[in-house]
Image (cartoon, rainbow, N blue to C red; front, side, top):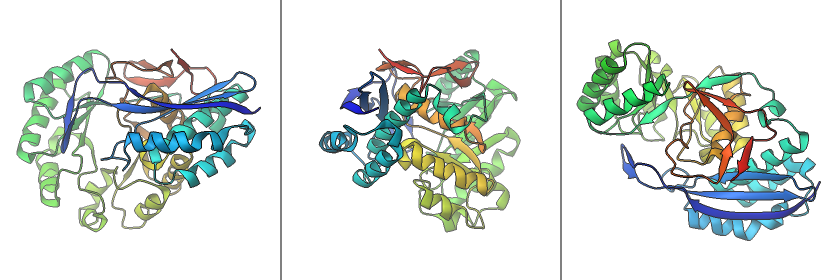
Length: 355
């Protein structure tokens, strides 16, 4: 089965509302899309979310390089040899992880459709479905509490709270949030690199009774020695995000004493499903819990991450809410959201359909 058509383009998917994290405010989102079609009429869809502050690439640059190399990488290639295509893609797009992820997602979607099974079942499903967190950006106390209440009413039972601007304000906000949602709702903290060692330890001590699930990337990346100065109990409750860009980083993080207890895998950071599986294997071998995160992304790449998450034994946490606030998308389907849990549908490939 040969690939006879390949197309790449970008879309501004927009946001229903802007949000703020420790170091910037996001008000819109552009994604790359890949469309591949075979001589038998099967098609695969991929998407990527380049962001200079996350993946180190700009969307115009990523789109330009895809327009230059995509057809030479995939046209007239047999879908059954998709691993060889992925290897060539890695070589040609080494500096463009989100663009590389988009190609790989499209190839995996197409190959699983060729097999006639959901992608997660190709790898070997180990989880039927898992709950995802839903993120609340940096807002006023009143806005935070109102958004939390609305999310709980929608069925979500895990809130990821963005912090990192002022530790005293963060402590106060968390206390009010815990009072609002009660003990049954889990709360995880994402400082987006906004703390130093003293502020993190102070925050953790002052919130001991507020039942924080874990802390995501508290320091700027590259400070593993500083992370290792933290008490072992606190390090175990920290998740590596910007410090985890590849399987090479995963090997570094697996050296004792462990700087983190949780690996947060994002397809856009690591370059897609192929590299994400390698990271997941390292996590499993060294008994790290896995979290699967995202940027503001199309249903396409969110679904891809979900399929791999549900096939990874080490998966414990999902943070795959990146498509919830998009004003529009180019596909439908992909996953089922019910009472805060994410499930794949039973359709072949990623289960997404072009609108």
